[in-house]
Image 1 (cartoon, rainbow, N blue to C red):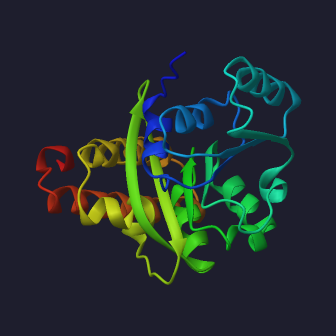
Image 2 (cartoon, rainbow, N blue to C red):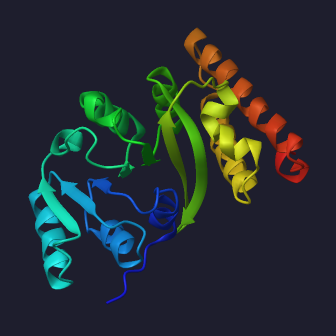
Length: 237
């Protein structure tokens, strides 16, 4: 039986440190752990979920494929199911950026003993990057994946010091340093969303609205500057 990952999870798998134990937190259907084991990327994966239905389904897949020696299923919440130093890579994907930050913060004693975090937030990506930097992680690799019309950023972080400016927090220091093929499209999507929001609230009265408009225009101008910088004048017009 072959396991085929979507582009989002495939990008997560590519950032896993090979040959070492991995934890997949909130595994859902267990596709990532099975892929990592069956493709020889990881000799052992600890897969967890706190929802009984997805957990049971994941266990059934492990049993069906006779992978119980390589995939250790654990029922529980966040990183609480791990012991410090038990895995080399921790993967957390398909959750909001704030929730991912909370999961890490709630078990910092475990998180700091792993070599790498591979994170795929559904939203609030800039907040998650700032959380990582403020808590002693540096971003070492990044990717963008597109799937069914949605764009996803994937972040790999390891222990260390790093500084971020606003643009790096929003679009990723690694993605900006070596521009990703999808970066221009992703920036344009963010710019279009900002411009739609500006148009939506521009006729509304109030000092608070004016303040928000100034902030939105500033953010839009930053994105346009980036698009020009990376030779995407057609997008920035």
